[in-house]
Image 1 (cartoon, rainbow, N blue to C red):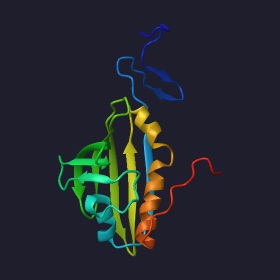
Image 2 (image 1 turned 90 degrees about the vertical axis):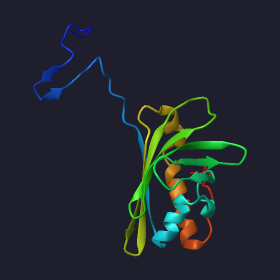
Image 3 (image 1 turned 180 degrees about the vertical axis):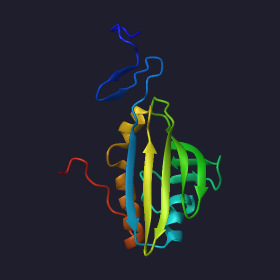
Image 4 (image 1 turned 90 degrees about the horizontal axis):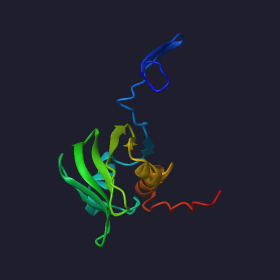
Amino acid sequence: MSKLGIPACFVILAGVVAVSEAEPQAAAMERTAAVYVRASYDDVWKQLTDPAAYGGWSSAPCLAFGTEAGDRVAWGSKERTVYEGELLSIEKGKGFAYTFAFQGFGFEETTEVHVDVVEQGPVVLVALRHVCTGAPNTHGMIGAYGWTKSLCRLKTLLETGTTMPWPEEDAR
């Protein structure tokens, strides 16, 4: 029985509502972004997965990006890793996924980033989903447009040869 004197699971005439006091569900939190890039699949893949090819489009330079599940991924500088994780899967022609954890910000949260990289005729779709369930600090630090900004910079770099400037946050 709940504190209200009614069973933890109950039926409402309009539908069924299940309430479990023993197993509360964490609110699903995700950040998503997608962009179509007019470039070769190989050029897009290389920018996303090869630290040596990194062209300045992301919020931090890529320090490590493995080639198989279990390998390390990391972004930051020689002096400080900003975020890192472990490659969960990678398949050219489909995409990749990795764990993601900010480093040195006073909280420990591990999330997952899933990136689909799909050739669609003359363009390549890059669709990203950052699952931040149970990680409110990471969700907040990424922000509503964090991944969108990075993917737009990737698109601009591959289509024009230079990256888009970072938007001014207060400009409206």
